[in-house]
Image (tube, rainbow, N blue to C red; front, side, top):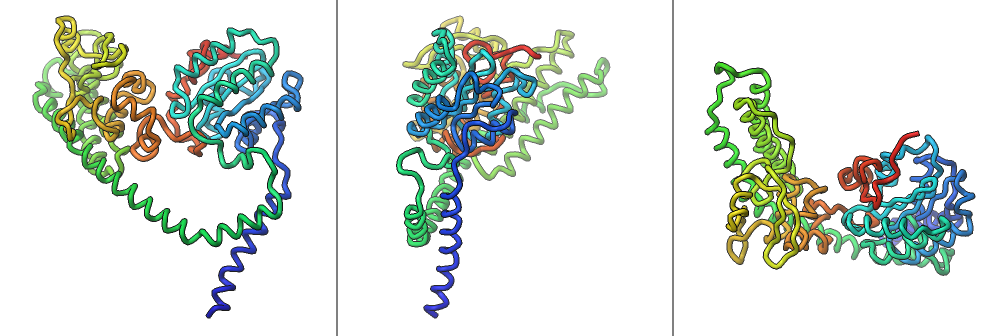
Length: 447
């Protein structure tokens, strides 16, 4: 019996050591490789710096190696690409496409021809911080690419949240030798059983927390679904009534579909993040009702605007107003006409309150469980700015579990592999419109 057990253990150990020794024998990839986004992404998944060979005159290998060491030593997920301005790279979607292909959350800086820009997953660095940093670098008029990139990295590495990707390997020092491989192999075998037990316990704890958060959300979401259903019941519209046209009937049908979609999504929800689909459907349905009302009254179809910040059940917002939460900084929020009138009269808006252990509170002063609820209504591009200085906003910016466990819109921690699963709003629609959090509107233009 002991012999059989020993054989079971020795086999995997030998295979593991062989794999580790093979890894040790392979040299780390350099910063240079054939041009194109695929080549850039392949290099950046294995190290922090990529230089297209056609741009090597701007940033030679010695400088690229020094910058690579600096970033690795910082242990932060900062990616740098130096690219020529050629048709291989599309200016308006360059940073978004690069982030998609690399598939790792982090800060991405690109020297593109003679232009510089950067962006980041908001969980790693807030959009305003990226904009300020890029603007400062560009306004400093550094004479060389090396000075510009080093200036950016020096600050970004100090401010970025998260960790260097595990795919980068060692962050410097003595390297990875045979003795290290053998030691790692032994530790893995010895600690494997304990690690497995810890992993199972953590998974159970996370599942319990998610179930509790989902049940907390369910009360609020069911109230929203019911409120929208009551709006549909009160709607005095018959698709066959005189004056009804195809556009009106389409709006009405879309609102009914949104109601059914919201109910189905809530019934199928298994995680807090699944609630985003519910509130997104409700927001879509309410806009359809607003469009139907305008058509019936002979008014122009309203522009698509976010819902009222104070209570999304009020429907699409009418205007943006300056507002500050108690003890917080002023910011611009979208509000409905009724809440705008209340604010103009010096009264408090009708805020959406939720139950908390401290009593009913506005949703922005409640806990992190309400993040996916709010995210479905407002989307990741708008939500962080609206919530700065509130309890929910603080959770978004400071609690890693907020994004990872509860579907919060700040996304994964820096250095985590997400593939193409990130909100493109965080990276903008292209450099021409200031996308990806760039400091000066991006590279812009076509070839």
